[in-house]
Length: 237
Image 1: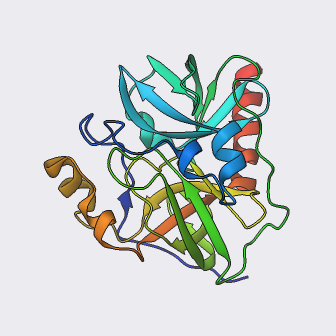
Image 2: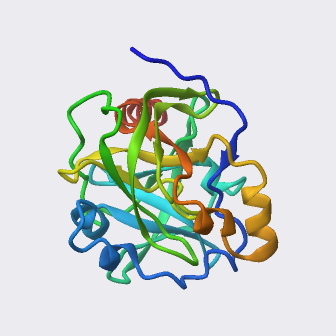
């Protein structure tokens, strides 16, 4: 099993409200005809806080969703989720992982459908993948290929890296395979450098719009689901 330790961290942060200003075509519409079509329509939503789009979530069971903890910032409440059809509901933070960049939120039953999970624990190098997100400017769906099938980003978890033009606002959103099965959550830019700062200063993810081969770290859905089950178990105890 190949391991890749990754440094030079750079989040796909939500950033300022101007950056995620809902200028992009909704992912549910842009994903039509791609393997991400089903999940974008039924298992994906935009995470909002105090009226501003902050990132993305995917369904987990009947009452919960998963996202990246960094998307929430230091906020503990005031969250809502907006589906592709415009429906919006309140979401309550259940817990954050201390071992990976993961948070679990609770929503009303049936708001999002749990997406189908890819059976293989590890993807294959060169495998085609698609991601959906909620950028303010730019494409809401990105296509790419797996680079390192087994990668670990200290503090953020274990998963894989891919080369794709994912933008700010994709964090917490789904990455799927050719069959539309969920492989993981878009999480971070291992070599992000000053991309996040530039985005905050300009109001647009210029680095992502210009670089089509951006390296993206994807948190494994298998590991994320296992951690989420532990978080839910601890809150129920």
